[in-house]
Every structure is written in C-alpha cells, then in structure tokens.
Picture 1 (tube, rainbow, N blue to C red):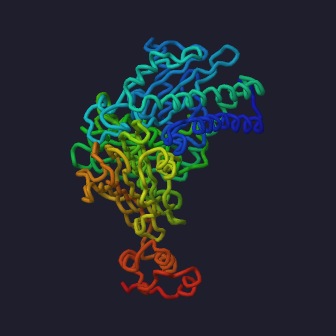
Picture 2: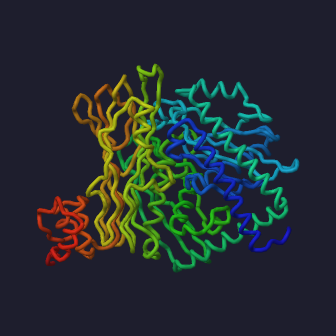
Picture 3: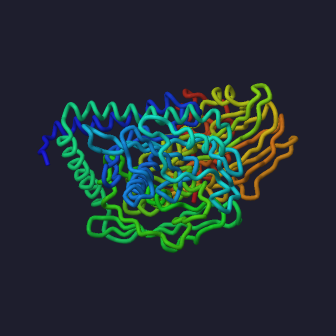
Length: 586
C-alpha cells in the first residue's frame, strides 16, 4: 500500500467528503418532493467495493442512515455473491427498500451504484431518500395500526432500476403501479440518480488527481485514525457498567408502553451495548430492524463525540449484541414503519441516559426525540390531482451542564427540518393557523430544556385522511441529574369543531378530514439538566419576561417568586428587575 503524508491525507479526506456533499446538494436541489427538496430527508455516501463499509458520508445527510446504508450495501454485495442479485456492470443502479436487508422503513428508498475507475470496481456510491408515499394501507406509508409489513407498502429487494445507464421501464412500471401520486415520483427518482452520477464524476476527478492507490491508502489510514479517535474519547469513561431505560408510548395496536432496557459496559477500551430485557416483538409498527438499532447507537455516540470523523472505523470500538427476541430485532413479517423515525430516537435516548452518569459535562438530557410524522392524503379539486403531504417537525433539545437546550431543533436522527409552511400551503390545500414556540414545554433544570412547537393546520379543499406516527405522548423526554422531564407530545384533531384525541395519543391513521377541520400538534420539549432550584433566578425572570414560562410556573418549577405583572417586560426592564426574584425558602 502506498505511504501517504499527513497533508495529502487531509486533502483526500476533504475531497471524499466533498464528493458526498455534492451528491447531497444535487439530490436536494433536483428533488420534486418538499420532504427531500426542503426538509433534506436524504443522505449520500461512498462505500467499500468488497465489504460495503462506510468510507465517507455527506455532512448534510441524516445520521441514522450512516449505519443503515453500510448494512444495506454490505447486504447487496452478499446478494450478488450468492447469485440472488444480478452482478454489477458500469452504468447500473440498484434500488432496494426492504427493511430487513439493512434498511429502515419502506419509505426510505436506497439506490446503489457500482463505481468503476479505469475499468475496475473501486467502490459503491449509495443514497437514501424518503419518498412521500410507497403504497400500503395509508397515504404516506406511516400506518399506525399495521400488523404486517405488507400493509405498510411496496417492498423491493435489490434489483437493477438502471441497467447500463438506461432505466428499466418494467421495474419502473411495477413501482408506479403500487404507489400513490406515481406520476410525481419520476422527479425524485431522477434526482436520486443524478446525485449518484455527480458523485461518480467528482470521485473520478479525485482519483485522476491522486491515483487509485494513494486514495485507497488514505481511506485505510483514515479508518484507522477514526477508530483510534473514538477509543480516545471512550477512554474518558471509567471502566464499569451503566444502565438506563427508555420507553416507547405504544406500538399503535396494543396500548401498552414498550421498554428499551440498555446496559453499556466499558472494558478494554471499547463499549459493549446489550438490550436484553427490552420488550418482545410487538404487533404494531414500532419494531426496529437490526440495521436501524445499530445505526441508532452509532448516531447517539456521534452526538456525544461529534468531532470524531464518520467512517467504518468510527464504529469499530462499539460492540452491539444482537437483541434477539426483542422488538429491537424485527424479522419478517413484523411491521416497522415507526422504527427509523421514532424507535431509533428512543434508543439514542437510552444511550444518553446511560452515559450522562460517567460523562456529565458532555452528555445532555433527552431531546424531543420524535420526528412528528404527520401524513395527509387526499384529492385537491382545484388542481384536479391527488396528493400526499408528509410533514415532520422539530422539538426541544435537552439541557446540558453548560447550556439550556436548543428550541425547535431537528430530530435526534438527522438534520431534516420542517418544510416552510409557505411551501406546504403552495403545494397542498392547507392553511396554517399557527406555527409557534410551545411555551412552558422545556423541562425544568439548572439548565432547562429547549421548547417544542405548536402548529395548527386546516384543510381548505376536498376531503383527506390524516395519519400520525409520533411518540413521547405518554411521558415527555427525560431530564438528567435531577432535571425535570420535557412536556409530552399532543395531537388533537378538530372535526366539526369537536376535538378528537387518538386512543394511542400520538399514533392513529385514516382519520377523515373535511373542509374546515383542523389538526393541532404540540411537539415535546427537551429534558432539563440539574436541580431546577439551582437555576439562576435572573434567568428564570428572563424566561418569564419572554413568555417562556408563566409566573406560576416559575414558582412551581424553579421555586422562584416573581411579581405577577411581567407580561410586557422589555430588555431594559428585565435588567432593572434582576434583583426582583426571591428563591422560596425550603
């Protein structure tokens, strides 16, 4: 293997990252669906030719796809070797969304292109995009009541959608015959293909400049360094065993919470994750496939140690025991539509809760931990066409030892953000009456949690069906080191002015919506960090002055007595009133 100097290593590392970033940008800029074009619910990466191991991923991609795309590419390679998938040729692109083959849920559709350089297979380029519909029982694919994966939509094994540069019309016809708004999917498909083609062009230029041997040497060295960096970070954790529990509200079918029991052992410089004791496989769609379970642990550790670069070496010190017999290792035909968007975030929450004890200056209280999946499907009479609107929403981040939590942050699993409401109103027959900070939702603490959001949306034309797969409706995100929990998620549907709350709180499907009916959602706040009574009274006053908490909440949550006439306090008045708060005795 060619020796490589540090400067060249750094330049090639940045070059590989830039290839992935260019793919991300092309994908979003070219996509038709707002969930990709505006919310960036997608990811792109480069993977090893022989093993599928991660080489590089775009910085703007969803972290939860880091592990799943590695699993998926490895599975595709295995399928090819076993003769279960056709062998690759230049210009081919495979499509797959089977959750049990290294995936998430069916809506996350993965493309993989064999990348050849000078006639030899050098690597795989792969991306994942969230399609707004994949067929199944409900528009948008988020079936809250599914009891089998077939009810969730079209399931594709690894097949060649593009053969030698030409899209296969028969495969494309099968896809379009099984999904809603099929005529609109071609825009996202071509965007996904274009991203891979851009990546191939950019990677060719990098190889032309440095040579294949030098780039391979850089990749190998970069992987070794990532593993060393992760182990150096893990060294901060004392040897021992750390435990935590996180809860999923319900599976959408049986109204009972699902337990995630986690035990993390630090020994010999590595971390060992064991989910034994978690709930058994469930009837509803909150099962998690093993690729998503592992990826959730990876992304949680990347949250804790964000400066460790992402490649396969990053994961080498992280050993995850297969959680056989639990809902965190779903096998066919268990439904899984909630695994990537919701269960993954409960897994990450369990990791945070376990490691906040040995790393109190690094790990935060629990974030909102829900993607807030809301799908509205119907027919727009003005545009004379069907539609599926998929919306995700942010929430509060957990407080930390140093700072209050971020308000309306993106979900734990990625950088996806709520699409601008102006864009949604332009595309779909809806009107937003409210999109605002959810006051009082942050968990109390010495550093409080961030706040969620409130939104209320009205149907303006036609008829539609609303479906929800959210979480944290039973209990809010857990606080840390004595901090309070964040406010839980709430969903209310107003039909003919009468409120309807789903039996499973934030999970339901096929709720009929007529003109004038409204959907109101309040997303969770983040957990608080530390004793709320230790919070600086001046900060409590500032929060009350800004309307974040009421005077009564300041007294109840933080033990601070304030004047009751603070509704119009401005910055100057706040400064003048800094001495007003008095901590309650006892």
